Image 1: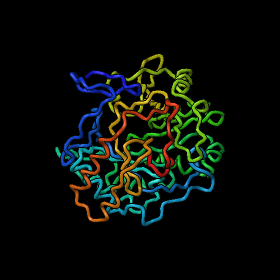
Image 2: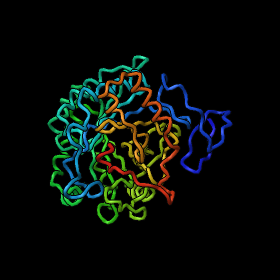
Image 3: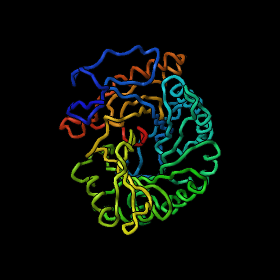
Image 4: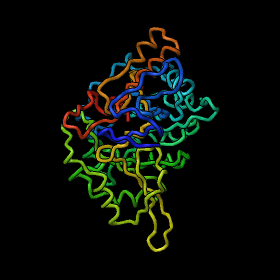
Length: 371
């Protein structure tokens, strides 16, 4: 493989490619094949948002009063979600499905949707990987049922170990519910349980070591995520963001971290380190940092996204979407839907260009896009 500099995060190309950095290949036949784009990437990981609603009001995600939610008729039904997920797996090469929101635990039919996805098999007969990203509220009472439905693992959002800080960040006093959800997920075998944390300057930026210590004690994997420009207020500023380098420096002041072997990351968004005992070198666990802003990984992106109202998004930061819902409801067959999806992904840009002065924020906030 060779690396071609596009002026954005590097995009891998097959060895021997002579196409110039700014040129685009002719679109392939949209009637067959996986979800390819013009830069050599293939999407095999589907993120499905099941709702734009959330029961927290994290101040970096939405205002205190919430946001205008989608009207119920606009949201895909359970059967429609299952049909599009099945299409993605059987016809488009998807191998991993993650359910997101908003808060997906607010979806009443979640277990049924998970069971239908878990029953799918890829073209080569492999089971589909299933996961869920959640704020953890309600997970304590549903973790066992989700595991029984076939869910593989969960990611739980938790930015602080301090209940008062949690209430200030989320505008809800539900810290104990999230901790109970993490414990229930581990007990149900939804492993590895991963915990996602966003550090906010002047709020919880002193907690990185404490969060990691807490995670190691419970056998869960901690992921720090750089705050991204997905707030509905449009007030995100890069200088206010806690960077991956700052997180790493804070952790290295308290732990011995060993980088994972080259190639271990693959297309995963997180750079990971083994946490080792200084005296013996014994591995204590693992920690990751998702540096979407300062060290973007667009060149290795293998994701396609489906919003709760049936729109294909090629990137978290896309400013355009492709409608599958209306075509599906108008009677389009699977071949038509698959062709539309392939065409959408072929138009995926090489990178999100957050560092470009002309960067445009997505018109929809994170809760409406899906994590």
